[in-house]
Length: 78
Image (spheres, rainbow, N blue to C red):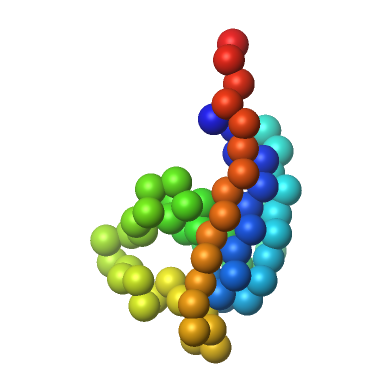
């Protein structure tokens, strides 16, 4: 599957964000700008779990009552 889009609401430091994903996507930025949160959101969206050192409460933004992650993609047959 080729991921094409990531949408998150209330996930860690990301209040609401949508990211277009390409064959190669780079998340540049300073510390605290959401690079790791985007990668963890992709992991959570694909597997329903996260790193062993984090629990579900660690994933919900401190000002949110809920969070959701949506991944869109296509299956390409080669």
